[in-house]
Structures are given as C-alpha cells and as structure tokens.
Amino acid sequence: MCGRYALYHDAETLNERFGVSNAGDFDATYNAAPSETLPVKTNEHSDAFSGFQWGLVPPWADDDTNPPINARAETIAEKPTFEESYRERRCIVPVSGFYEWADGTPYYLERADGEPLGLAGVWATWTPETKQTGLGEFGSGGPSGEAEPRHSFAVVTTEPAGVVADLHHRQAVVVEPENEDAWLHGDDPRELFEPSDPGLVAREVSTAVNDPTTDHPGLVEGV
Image 1 (cartoon, rainbow, N blue to C red):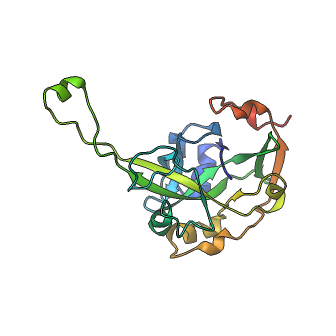
Image 2: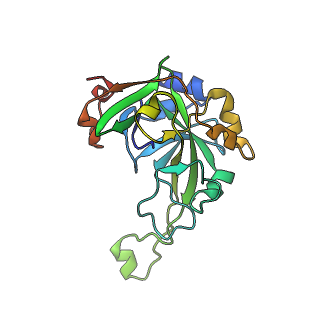
C-alpha cells in the first residue's frame, strides 16, 4: 500500500530525472497525503508535471466520496474504477520516498543511492454536473455556472519485495527510468507489475507523521 509519501528533491534533480521543466512550480512536501494536489507526469503531458488530486474519481462517478488512492495491479485492467484509466490514462508519481507502517510503527523508505523514485499511477478526469455560484445568481434564475473538471490519480500497488516485504503486504510499483516510456505509452505493460526490489532502505521515524497536517523535514529523519 502507498498511503503517504515525501517529495523534496530540488527542482533541478527532478527536472533531469523525470524529463520535465516545471518541478519548481510545486512546493516540497514531507507528508503528502490523500486528497492533496500533487505533481504527476501523465501520458498526455509528459514534458511537465501536472497538479492532480490524490484519490482517483472515474469520469462516470456520481460523486467523489472516498476515492481510492491505490489500484491493485492484479485487477487494474478489469476493475471498473480503473480499467479505462489503465488503458488510456497512465502517469508517473514522483517521490523522494514513502512511508509504511508495521505494527503501528512508521518507517520511511527511500533509494539507497538517494535518487528520487517514479511510482506507477493511473489518472482520471471527473466533472460535476453543475457548479452552484452565488445565491444572488441562483435566486434570479441565472445560470449555475460550468463545473470545473477535477483531475485525480491513484498509485498502483503489487506484491512486495526486498525490505518492503518485512513491513507490509503491498508495495507501490516502482517504474525505473528505462521503463517509464513503456508504462506511459505501452499497450499493456503489466510485466512491470512483477515484484522487484528497487534497492530501498528503511528507517523508523517519528509517529508525528501519523498526523497528515504535520509537514516538516524532521518527519523523514530516523528516531
């Protein structure tokens, strides 16, 4: 499972690693949480990060209650919530590292070489039927206004490998740089879902990370 992560590498490093030009437009975060707007690299705009909300809402949804933040690799191609996104709308989620909890204890995981990671993701666009504007307009019979589309994403998870297997029964799918094009533009790149160890290291961190409103560099430091 991937339910919290960090993204704090400098813009130059992220731009070079992911082949984008606008990483500096996004603030660093040490506790990225569901429902936040976060940078992703999509198959439609692969030269720049786009700000999407974490928690995927499919286009046909009646509302956006409890949108899933993860998509299981084993069922992503068949499950109605994700099947269209898997076929047509994939993305890379840049992270500096991510958190997992084992028996209530939080751990921070990152690459041993300190380089950022790209996680496999899928995205969607959902548009509410209407958008209510001011009461004055509504009362006068004026138009309710056009609803703004909401772009959202979910992180793909698979069976764990390496150090993650000691902490949790699921792991975010890590897409190595040489496989990013296959993930974003391949016909059916399910071979990338095979469990693999991307060379991660883990350290126990403070339970302060449990609070999604807490965000500071100390969260990724060991205790």
